[in-house]
Image 1: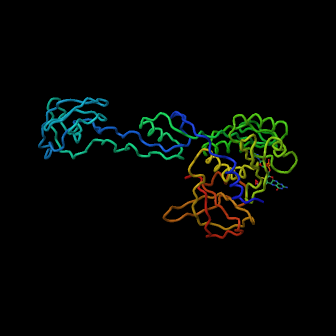
Image 2 (image 1 turned 180 degrees about the horizontal axis):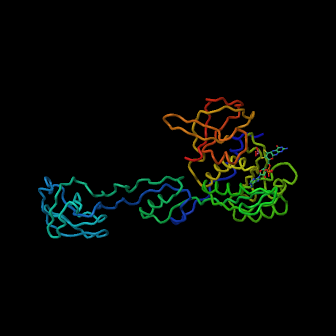
Image 3 (image 1 turned 90 degrees about the vertical axis):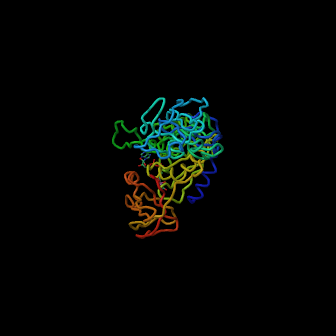
Amino acid sequence: MRTVAEHLAACLEIAQAAAPLDVVLPDAVGCVLAQDVVAGIDLPAVDLAGRDGYAVISTDLVGAGPQRPIALDVIDSVRAGDMRATRLVPGSAILIDSGAPLPLGADAVVPWEDTDRGSSRVAVGRSVAAGENMRRRAEDVREGTTVLARGSRVSARHVALLAGLGLNRVRVRPAPRVVVISIGNELVEPGQAREAGEVFDANGHALASAVTDAGGRAFRVAAVPDELGALTECIEDQLVRADMLITTGGLSAGQGDTIKEVLAPLGAVRFDAVAMSPGRQLGLGTIEGTPIFCLPGNPVSAQIAFETFVRPVLRQIAGRASLHRSSLPAIVSAGWRSPAGMREFVPVNLTGSPAQGYRAEPTAPPGRISLHALARANAIAVVPEGTQTVVTGDTLHCLVLDS
Ligand SMILES: Nc1nc2c(c(=O)[nH]1)N[C@H]1C(S)=C(S)[C@@H](COP(=O)(O)OP(=O)(O)OC[C@H]3O[C@@H](n4cnc5c(N)ncnc54)[C@H](O)[C@@H]3O)O[C@H]1N2
Ligand code: MOO
């Protein structure tokens, strides 16, 4: 039997990071930066007014107050985008809009609320400190600063920064296209009528969502029967649009489990029992250079196997800097027997804080396969291969699912 670590290493070896592409900003969202982004300009590019009011020289207003307003000559007005060179002289003010460039000589803005709103002469009822109500050149970003690091996933917030810096293209690794195929004669599409003995396809939907969450572009194929011709045709058809294939089911050695038979002539795929619970039966290989992961049919096993092996590979292809979920040590609220020589993954509810420490409570009796328990969990406790007895109060490392 292979260990989890050996199988993960084999998975990571099979898929390399995708080649980078230059894309326009809308296409970059969800992709991973293949470059550090360095600001080519200052942000703001010049000193700007932060309020609508009057640009002033702060020392002109020393001692001004509501009972003792100081009058200044209004010599000009500037609006946003106005790049005429305007200049203040002592004793003067310039009417200014928020976002307009500050005139030369000005070092503060008095909001109009603190004035009599005069147009040729304005009475100012308060003093201002130098720098008040203005945004200094480069106070947000200084030219030459690395603002985004390669390996970050581009979000709407990143697009705002990139566009704000005047960038319309960026170098990213494209999101890998992942085809998810559920195999099983018993499977029907959720929402359709179900006959006795039929099972709704949970894996296709679960894994397509998990692919998207991991940074891939998911294509879900409606469930395919466990039948040689249909399955071969489906896999061959899907290869054209796939950077990766994931199948679930059809793995056991029982009657009619055909994935091994289908893949034998198509590519180099090996099937191993991996020392983990759940998610023991796993296939891994390539078809015409495209990586394929064959996961167990059981929906909990399929999701745990995806988490453990496929998610890190997807993040590697996408060029993410970190491949694995963060892990927290937590004290378990109950004990249980864990299978000998296996790494066990137990859905838990993780509570606590960095200061108080964390506590993990299994959401179902460990070992029970339950979609409901996995859905209720916010973390997965990992019992190492060498541990057969977990005792109340033991500390286990937990992979954080929702953070
Ligand atoms: N004699 C042995 N039998 C089995 C062994 C073994 O070592 N010796 N291994 C067991 C393990 S572990 C696994 S895993 C399975 C592998 O079987 P399959 O991958 O073929 O899984 P299925 O039999 O197709 O399904 C298992 C279970 O899950 C349901 N299922 C399947 N696909 C879906 C789906 N897309 N959505 C919802 N539910 C699904 C299916 O109906 C079954 O109930 O072999 C064991 N047997
Ligand atoms: O591979 Mo099986 O799903 O251990 O659960």
